[in-house]
Image (cartoon, rainbow, N blue to C red; front, side, top):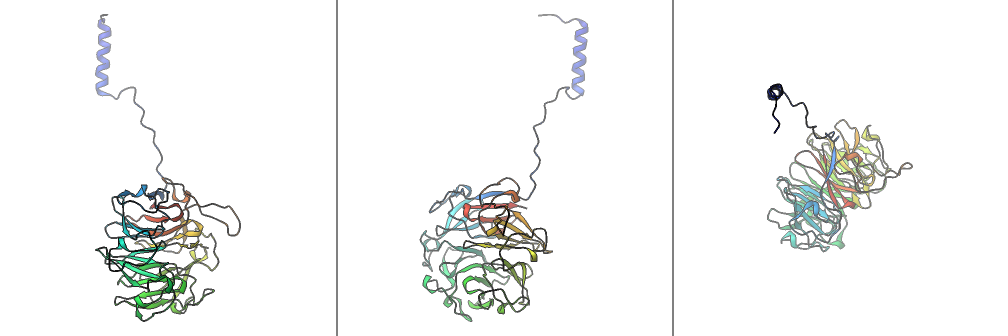
Length: 391
């Protein structure tokens, strides 16, 4: 071994002392950084894009082959309820696992008084959770509204529940003896009264705590909108398809290509859209915007956040849009589908997860809810998926 001379030993000792009190001269470069996502951004929380007649119990939600996700609802502990075209209602637990909740996979309306999992439902259903925690199923094809109690027992709450008896009758009597015309949406007020978007009858109907049904809005007439700034029961509605209350107790209606409001004085006003379907108006007053909130029989839902902002699925335009508390409308998800009357044509599709929601492709968004963290969750119907927009 080669011996070091005294000068070399002194140099090595000096370098050792320096290194003990200073940063190393050569540093390992840090890992590359990535800029944060510009929100809101979007991701898929349910559905894998495949279609199946049934999803096995215990399947992770993101691996589930839902067949056309339609209605959504959420309960007080975070269970998410989902309907699809296979004539099932599923429950997705907070842990992200899927379980059958109602339906047998066969079209029908039987099973009252028994387990919801043994009862037949149709594929076109919307959902809501009552203030007391029961799940309500609005069965458009069967013309009825049904309740699943906390023990899993299903009963009919409104409508004759017979596919051959869709029509209009029964006001001021028991809701179970009334006829409904393709009911397409349901919601509750703070007192627990049930409201039904009775679409083919062009009415909103109310079922009170004693089970009596009345007409809350709509004259039953068809044709052009009428009744603006007048009594809601004198107005002509073109839907209604989806309904929701804000925190002021005002009822909002997805009424085809328009959104209309019934104030606490029972007066109706149009707040967005017009009789003509279209696309446009972002960044300006919603009253001057054009909508296509209904398309191909699948209706865009509406929902409010805790501060009073309104979100809705502009289904035919393949967007999720927001009307803030000052009445300004903007798109928060979807690149859209424009053909009114000219311009670029963006086909519906599936893309964008992990990126900005406004750059994502959607394909007929329908049901929409707000989760406990204020994020928007919606059914991307033709993609067979449930997607979340992080606020």
